[in-house]
Length: 380
Ligand code: PLP
Figure 1 (cartoon, helix red, strand yellow):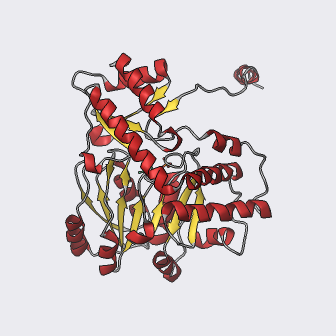
Figure 2: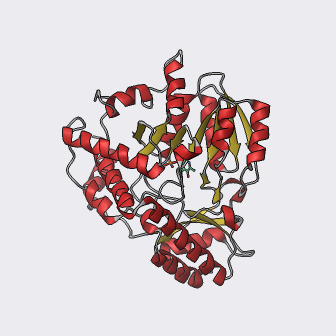
Figure 3: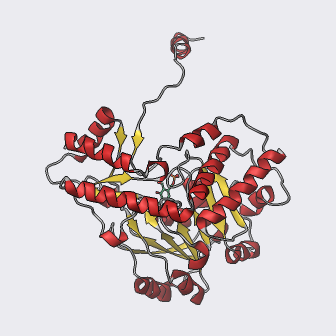
């Protein structure tokens, strides 16, 4: 062993057991996981083909259909974060040369553009300033111009805190024989979603925001229309890990080994979803709305302004304008180091202009607002 190596080895031996600061996570995600979710995650792992674990997978599928308000048989959790589920929607729907129209009004619209291009889509994008959304007429005009096979929209743009209304978009897509793909990463559990009523064909989300779990097991769903396109494609899905035809054999009746599921994350996801269903999805949406309204009025009471027009603000994520002369980064740092509260900074067009405050899942409570406002009063 070299000298340097032995020094490192000695240092490693002195490491103490894991200990992390007790933070209140009020940024863009993750949020704090619910205590019973953490308890579920520390349960001993089962084998990934154990009938008791397969039962848990079935329950996750039913619970996901409930929170998403869909009957899609092909509804699963992808082993990975929201970006993996995002990539699953693209990998399973895009064939090289397909025109995909993407609405870009923030950071995650741009990520969809990047991903779709990597899978050979002929990407056409339309854009709006960050903090705004697309009207149905704007979408209709773009559909007429580009005649896409897939339309991709972000329901809850985490970089801006703006909600994209989806009512009417599914009908528009059917007029053009186009699939509707929706990012629900920052909306699932906290913002009303009706996938089937809206005619959404492909959707993805994450576990660490409105569902109140840890990151790593990400909801993914495909409608029968999306499945028909997948079954008709002449070439294999160019991503082995995310190929729904292979994953479907593990999640469906065949129960064929595909990959070793992250068992404990699935325990956590099942518990997080169970808590939402115990509360009732409508009650969860109402709780997020009530608490965010309390946040907005509390922020206004200390002189702060929101970036997005009220009717399109998200219940899960608020962009708060950094007042002139205030160093936004320094404030966020002080909140973290002196008050153990995490808030996010602005991304892209909004860098340096806003803080991003999340009230998601377990953290969507009046106490979270009170703690943040108390700390902001001291820091600003
Ligand atoms: N889409 C949106 C709207 C997001 O907010 C995020 C992450 O915050 C993602 C996709 C990617 O999810 P993840 O970071 O879990 O991979």
